[in-house]
Length: 108
Image (cartoon, rainbow, N blue to C red; front, side):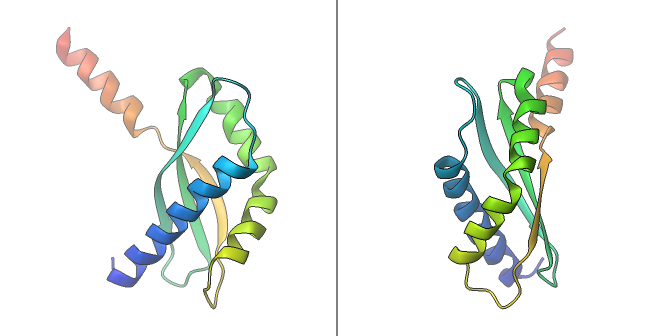
């Protein structure tokens, strides 16, 4: 990955974190964080990897994010100064879940 793409991903991650915190009201006790951003080299598409706490609210959180995607995308486009503005999609990041499962198996 080029240095430019790392910077683009970093800026999108920072801005998305702020936008989600400011614009989306999850039900009490639900917390979502942006763990990773993966943008295509042509800047047309961005996958936003989201970690959700607690695990039982993954479906609710992902549906809420998808429902608010257009509002978030418009707000993101106002904040970014890119020639091509990427279309976003949200993906649940389950790498933490897999690590927890492996640790639990190793302890047993």
